[in-house]
Image 1 (cartoon, one colour):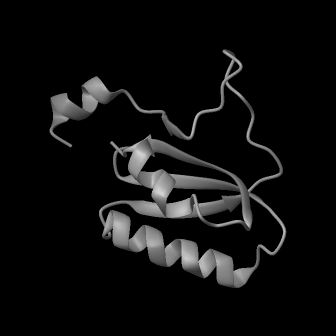
Image 2 (cartoon, rainbow, N blue to C red; image 1 turned 60 degrees about the vertical axis):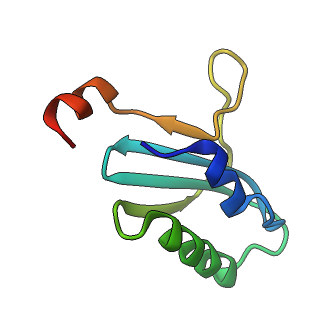
Length: 95
């Protein structure tokens, strides 16, 4: 499972990113949804990949997705990290 507070350090200083959300659909996969801001380009994507590679160290499959919007949860709050798999099953199967 990924840690939200430490991931804020990865993207928090990148002004080219308006909004970001890390989605973990499986224990070994992370999808980073990005709403691009002014100045976002291929160099920004490369810098993101570099930073995330040092964070995840090839332990997960990472994909970066550019999206128009990241919707709020039904509660009205925005989630920076979203885990979509059943964490109890992760422990049970030893993943």
